[in-house]
Image (cartoon, rainbow, N blue to C red; front, side, top):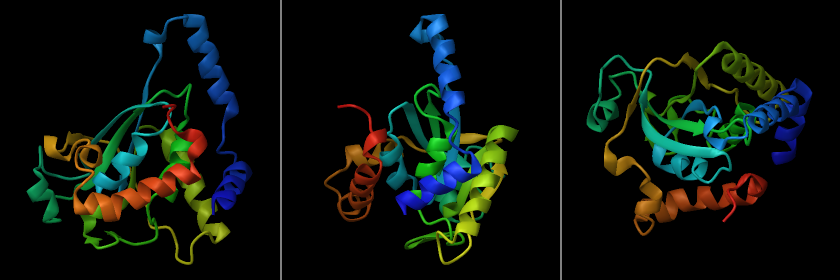
Length: 214
């Protein structure tokens, strides 16, 4: 699967070394790390506990916040979102340094750390709040997701079509404090041991070149 994804990315031109190099040159010209311009990606991959722990380990990612987006209720609580009536999705706001990792590379991780072919469901979590979604921040992000999604469907990477939705980023509401850094703060908890840890360990093996240096 990893080789298939890399082939697809290359064919559709999603790996942008020029973009990465240009950003790095700009950073060097500034000669001040404090002037680095950060960017944001907002992904919904089902339960945010699972993938928060994954994106926190990615080199170039400086902050991952679990929260809610895409709904019609201001400042929703977890209890409200769980009803499936607010329109929000559990999602992650990922702040990253594009000179170290590109949006394209984050998308590669996004597609592989959840099942984008199950409508409003990830495993035993069912409801629109668990939908696979990219909240795009600009037209460039939208175009990349559309291109990548079409290429994946055409490739037959999965038996079923990709149902990931593309929605414009409007508002993001951070989840309650106890949801933040959930896996790292609760590693002994049953859900973390039996659901999250296997996902994290699989990610570490497949994407070992993208992990933060210890």
